[in-house]
Image 1 (cartoon, rainbow, N blue to C red):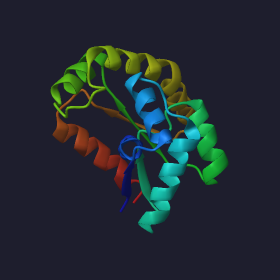
Image 2 (image 1 turned 135 degrees about the vertical axis):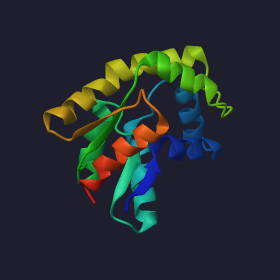
Image 3 (image 1 turned 135 degrees about the horizontal axis):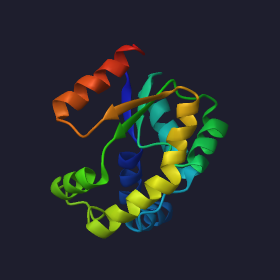
Image 4 (image 1 turned 60 degrees about the vertical axis):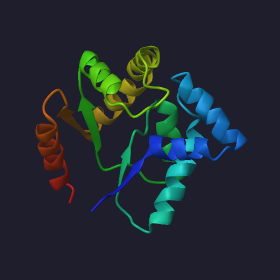
Length: 159
């Protein structure tokens, strides 16, 4: 079994803490920017230690080369595989605007900024792991049931 850790959830909880660092994180996310790597790595490592477990599904990290480098230098271990949920931007936009979670960063301007950030910063990370044969690509432009089945199939290889 894997413990699910969401980098975004950990960051949002950190923002709600009201600390100066949490407020800085809030402003960066509002602008569609990526939070400093050390902040995210330390939040993830703290959550990993607190769980008492040793197998993790880290959701939404690393998002750029700096994140990846910080993880490799701080954590002391690398991932077994990377799940890449591939989906056209128009489909993602419709889904994000329709999810109705009340998030301040779910507006068309911020979504477009996040797509640019993904193409410029995150896609090179996917390409890096692809060269290491660690990427499991999930076609996410299909039903939730089909996405789940495809994802579950990848996990069975690493159980």
